[in-house]
Image 1 (cartoon, helix red, strand yellow):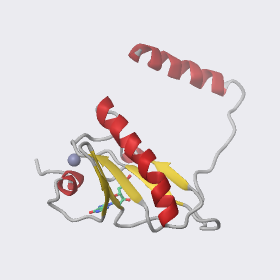
Image 2 (cartoon, rainbow, N blue to C red):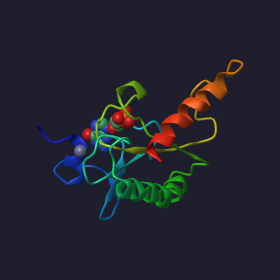
Image 3 (cartoon, rainbow, N blue to C red):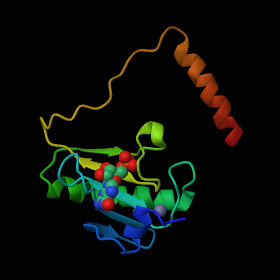
Image 4 (spheres, rainbow, N blue to C red):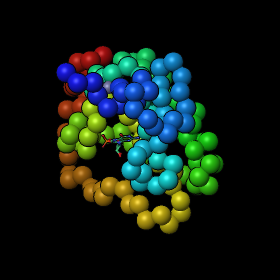
Length: 139
Ligand code: 5GP
Ligand code: ZN
């Protein structure tokens, strides 16, 4: 099976505008940014998404996100950042290697996030029960 795009970037086999690297993680500029400074943080080890990344790699990715969010915001003169992760095709995942998007935000940049709606009567309690059932199976 051909190696995935982000594994090749992690190994330096393909170029990227790298902004941070440590033993477990790499952060580099997204090639098609929502806003300038849009950064992707990946584990160096291959996985597919949140469902199969190891706990240690996920912790490392989260720590890298935390550590570079402030520098990215300051460097771009931004006044906020969105963190985003798409998992599986239905959720918009295109590259099957885990990656967290850090998107610097400028006031009035026109980026509108997801629309929201209200729960119907009793729906939230039913959803909660279904989730609790699944969570308890993994506990
Ligand atoms: P996803 O939709 O899977 O969450 O996001 C994949 C992201 O990877 C997209 O935002 C896309 O612009 C970015 N991307 C795709 N190919 C490349 C590439 O070759 N280099 C870089 N730096 N980013 C890429
Ligand atoms: Zn990979």
